[in-house]
Every structure is written in structure tokens, then in C-alpha cells.
Amino acid sequence: MGAIIVIALSAGGLAPLRQIVEALPPTCRASVFIVQHVGANPSVLPEILSWRGRLPAAFGRHGEIIERGRVYVAPSDHHMRLGFGTILLDREIKVHFTRPAADPLFVSAAETYGARVVGIVLSGANSDGAEGLRMITARGGLSLVQHPDEAKYPDMPLAGLKRDHPEGALTAAQLAERIIAHCACND
Image 1: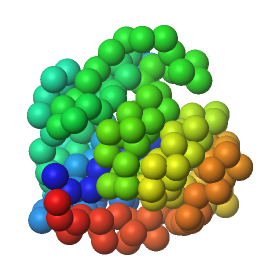
Image 2: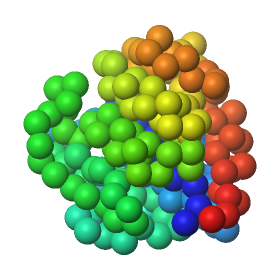
Image 3: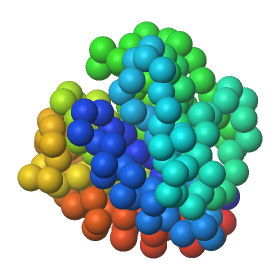
Image 4: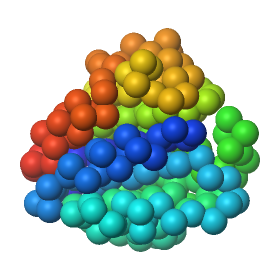
């Protein structure tokens, strides 16, 4: 299995997410996991990401085996966590007043995959993802946030910067470049 890329977004994060996902090459060997704050509302995020993205995108399913070169989206009203080689979904208590939330995904990825994890927090109006980024960094992974000046709602990136001091606050274009470098990671 290649790199594990986990991405969180809320208000204002769709455009930078699309820019990142659409930049991923069809040969990408990483597995990408996305949490968008949608609550129990219906989501069409996999379809949006498939319009111009070159990797297949779908909602993660409980017990699904993780494959390289795929984009997995947390389904509405479910936290998505990662086990060894599998996706785990649950409806446990809301985190940061939302389900799905980033921290359950980020923390489980860090605990399971350690230094293979790249965590990214995009635009959003709360502090979700900050604790997860701290855990990713503590386990040897790479933490990045969207530059607060570019984020439509900078609270989530700012919380990540304050809590974790990630390696970089980058524009969406710069984040895409960094992630492309992780697409070729081998076992």
C-alpha cells in the first residue's frame, strides 16, 4: 500500500479540494480519504470529484478493503476511520458538532499507518482536524494546511497551525504539488 492521504474540509473547501484531486495523476499509488462536513445531508461529493478527476471516487463502505489509486469519501452522518487495510464506518458521537468529522479519520490513520500519512486541512469554520494533524505529526507523518489567506473560512487551517505547527501553510496549487509527490510512494 502506498501513502495514505487524509483531507478535511468544511465551508469554502470544495474548490481547493477539487483543485487537489483533479491534479492527481491516474498512476497515483496513494489512497485518498476525504471528510467534508455535511452532517446528515445528502452528498454528491464523489460525483463532483469524478467529473474531472482521474482517480475513481466513491463513498467508503464499512469493511471495504483499501485500494491504491482511489478516493474514498466519508458518507453522510458517518465517521470514517481506518483499520489495517480496511475502512471502518460508525455513527458514534459527533466530534466538533459534526459527523462525519476529520479528527476520527486523521487519528485512526496516524495510529494505523504512522509515517505513511499525509494530513491536509482545508477551509472551514471550526477547529476540526487540528488534533488529528497533531497526532499525524507525532507519529512521523506530514501535516499541511491551506494557507489562511487563501481559505474562504480560515478557522480550521488556523486551528491546525496553532495546535500542530504543521510543515506548511500552502495554497491549493502548492498542496496539489506536494500531494503529487506522494502518489509514487511504494510499500
